[in-house]
Image 1: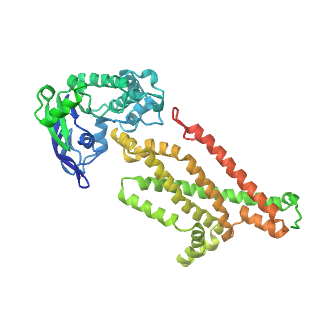
Image 2: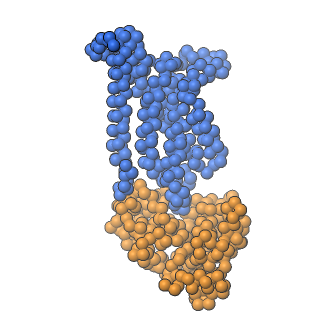
Image 3: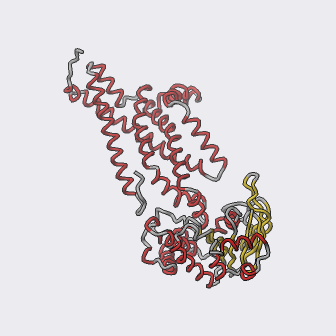
Length: 242
Length: 238
């Protein structure tokens, strides 16, 4: 489904990604973790072409992301993305956020889109907040609407870029619950997160990054119980002590 | 000071009519110039923030060119120099045969100049909406024009209502420069009243009051517009 081969990227002289290779197959949940500045967010943004890579290749559903002939808009419409800072469209009600892409990109009729949006607002537990505007919702609610917005495109995979990092602790679980449900329904997911509990619960594999490199790419059990690298062991000892 | 005050002069024929005519031309000139400034300025603002390097460059060149030459100089260039650069027939048409040559030139000059300023407002508005919103729009598969239409512009224009109001008021006041190429707008009429009656204080007081009433009205209306389009839940800035 998603295959990243020796992806490298530079910001000026600074190398953010250094020959990163990994893959996500259909139905798989892969968690990407690592310290700040390790390139996790950049890597995930390269998967749907919000950032470009300078070397290597990323293939999504058979298309090379950075190839000229690839229609990025079509590719993006198939891959949902959820951002750290939600990025709901502030001038639209929650449900209109979920409708917009369906009508403008998938060319569904207003009615079809409305029906699907209501379904999704129910799924994320926010139906009664449908007509509220983003600024009237809490962070956790906004993020769940953002997940509904991504799901409305009937994506073949979902990308999460630190979806809970900007949330109050109380709100985190509401969002994680929705994500766990999705994972258990078999959604293909690539998730950048520090939520190790989430990783242990639903991830099939964990990718650990440091200084732009993929240091470790292991099945979840193995990553937590017997990490292969000192760097990952140090990282785990620091975040699992509390 | 020996000055015979005579406020009544302002309401006497033909001077009252002159003031009304002047105001009519000032407002017409301002509105027409604003249509050019707003539409061209918005287009330029979009160009300057677009992903195309060529469009960005074109936008930048326009802004630097028009923003950095004094408006009065631009007015003279358009009126006195531009027609001479055209082929004979076209030049003659611009100078004489075009409907209301002075007024049309003033509308064009003030409109094009203000477009460069509107462009910068629109650009800053779009930038204020942010890369995150742009990415969110792209991430659901919208094309760049769709992202502008449905996400960036509706939010950017809400943000820049106050500075755009200032730009309109600036156009309204700059319209008085049109008298230098012979457009008989409000300021020109005021001077004419002074020349005919020697009641300069009254005439210019009238002009001041009229300009102020219009600007306050515009500000008041734009406040209402701002309130109307405010997004629920957003905290107003001022």
